[in-house]
Image (tube, rainbow, N blue to C red; front, side, top):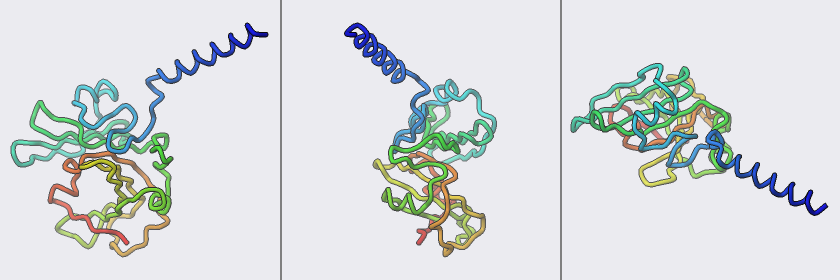
Length: 197
């Protein structure tokens, strides 16, 4: 009987160690840090080792001081990663996923309702519009500033071209993004972000 108990305890310990060492085990949204295996600050080569080559280039912008912003997509937009910096020195500043498996420690992610976001985290909800048409938003987002200069953003299922006054309490999260603020377009001057009620 004692040998059986010892064997079971050893088996449990081995299984627990194997589970904790599993590289696929981390499927979380980490506030201010990353999503799954992807982390803010990674190089393009490091991201490519995890996701392979990107399918599309979604954005390509030249910024002041010789810096660039490039945004790539994998798996038909399932993953979107933005890079900022000078050529050959670009780092990840934005990671976005459409996966329902990636959840925050609070259990928030794709499919969560906006009212639950507001009950769980201190989020700031914004409508995003082009500066040329500030009254017509193309995106609604609730941002959680967990670390200085970094946010976890929950994008809502928001129809394009809707006025800011529309209520958002019943909308669901359709994508989750972790980013450095300087890498996000709300902070680059071409777009305007207006607080939502």
